[in-house]
Each structure stands twice: as C-alpha cells, then as structure tokens.
Image (cartoon, rainbow, N blue to C red):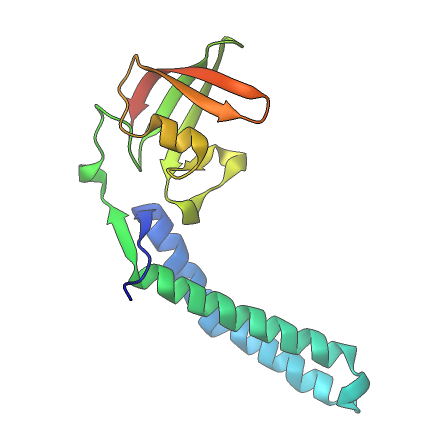
Length: 158
C-alpha cells in the first residue's frame, strides 16, 4: 500500500527534519533520564513519575514514527515551482473579504505545516481548496459555519 503524500514547502521540510533530530537525540535522552530517576523512587506500581515518563517516552516514539512517515511521503514544493499566476502551495495570497471590506493575507501550505496564528492555511482546508488554482481578480466562495463568505484575490506572491 503506497504511503500518504505530504505536500511540504522547503521551510516545512526543514522544520520536520529539525524536530526529528531533536527528538532522536536530545528528547529521547531527557526522557530516558527521567525514567531512570523515577525508577529510583521505589515501587513502580505506585510511581506516578515513572508512569508519566513512560507515557512521554511513548509519545516521543510515536511522533518519531509519524515524522519519519511524513518525510518518506514528502513532496517538496520548490520555490522555482511556485507559480505566481495561480494560487498553489507555497504562495502568499492577499484576499479581500468582500462583505467586511477587510484584506487578509494567507500562506498556502501542506496540511502538516498549518499555523493559524501566522495565517498559514492548508491547501486541504475549505479556504485553501477554494483558493487553489484561482487567479488574481477572481472571487471565491467559502462555506463557513455562519454561511458563505466571498473573497476576492488581490495578490499572489511567493
């Protein structure tokens, strides 16, 4: 069965590689040290520090497996492949909320790079899907919980 494809920008790829390196080196050692210390507290059946450390160890290992799968299935969108004529992954898109007359800028990224606080939205989100493949000047409609919202594409850049 083929692995899932993860669309990433170069920045997203770098962040995943850095996180993986941190988890495999620094974090695993920290957790192993916590487990070692917790064992010294005696009876493991009633040792919450030990249980917490073992749970953290499992979370770290699961995240390592998850990142490794993402990297195996990574499809990196290179800067030279980012088109300025139509919206795609890697683009910054300035849109106008037609009803509110408010300009908003989004960066379109793969689903693993979403950062709502920094307006990085997924190409798989309702807004991302509405914008994908569209050109400057086009109006897109996005279904939101409170109804349909119209956005006009003002600018597409890298």
